[in-house]
Length: 161
Image 1 (cartoon, rainbow, N blue to C red):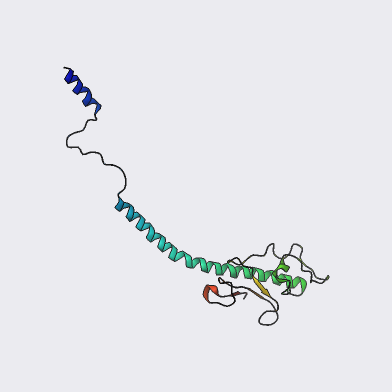
Image 2: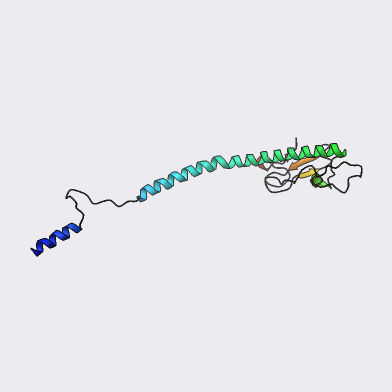
């Protein structure tokens, strides 16, 4: 009798399982599944990098052109008010603060012509020459990605049109 009761209680402590049922599987991913996912992520990353990086270079060139156009308009407003462009010695700083070389009769706009001088997309200041390469007027340009005069493609100098 004792043996029957012992068997009865020990059988109750175990979960009931039929003889043809399999053991429960352990949850998780196999190494092959993980390698396939990592491979697919690598392919997607490669495609994105190949397509995005050239767009960034073009965007930087377009930003430089837009900045140069804005600075060119500010230089034109300066010329309309003061009857001349800033000298090369005064540079683009004349757009934010009145240069000392202005005659007393000049009508420099209070607050300047722009709030702050931007740097080109590569972190260097824009270049300004007066007179320009083609005689009267000014040259306003960025030295491009390489920061040196001349160059081709993304390294080419970007001039005001």
